[in-house]
Image (cartoon, rainbow, N blue to C red; front, side, top):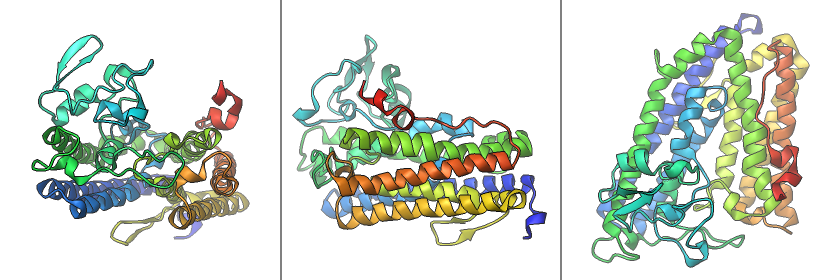
Length: 404
């Protein structure tokens, strides 16, 4: 399609089509994860646990590419905490190592261990948790007491239930939960029946939540309708808000720079599985997709169409080329980080204080995200979209505040 033929309306419509495809892929892989979990629970051993873990890792690939839709689309942002909230106080869910501690000034449910306890107290009221169901998790436990660290549902709750705690600090190794934690015959660490119920319920809930969001992007769905109602300029602003806010405040700042400043392995996104490098990479790929209009689906097929890149090129070819180059450079920096994670050391080792080479690898990706954000801001100006507020981050804007 020639640049002159590309309209803002067509670009926004294609952006919605890619959202539909991405959430469909996320749903499909979540269903595959659910099937792998059910297979594991039917026969809990090392092989079926490994297969469930692989299915979890695979499910993260399309989901992380949807995150660029979070900022700017209120329906996605309001929903996102149910499926991808982190970090979590895992003692709410299950047993933890003594080093975790028994209590927290910020969270009365820090070590409530609902798997071990058929009733727990929330805000002074006794709650019946004798039957672990998706409804108990979503309606009672998720953000219980109004505390964000009480993450009871979503990818990271399932990740913890599959891997267990990563007790290696900044050293090598991920979580190593035994398969027998789910065995009814050879149960380890107690309450295996309830742990099975929790894992199965959390997996069912993830599928249901993704079904909801996938439907929201179908024709007539709430998210697609809200985008259409915002008009062409509003739609373009939504796309660029998502790109810029995920690039800068969320990914470069809260997910990457904060952990690097603190050297804290608890500040890595997929902290139980040591999959953080991939989560960050696919966030960056998702940002690029929002610009290029090219999405590679899980089955290997490509979805292409009218792109923001073409619109920007029609207004200012130099800015279009600059942003394209910056997005490519960021993905390349993420790929270098992935290569290091797969061949040298995990992400939580890279961010350790005193690890100059690892720190530099992570910082290069952060620098790429910051640079592409500046180009995104120039694209906003080129398209005459006025002032768009992008997410900020103390970790980037006021790093000294992090230590106060």
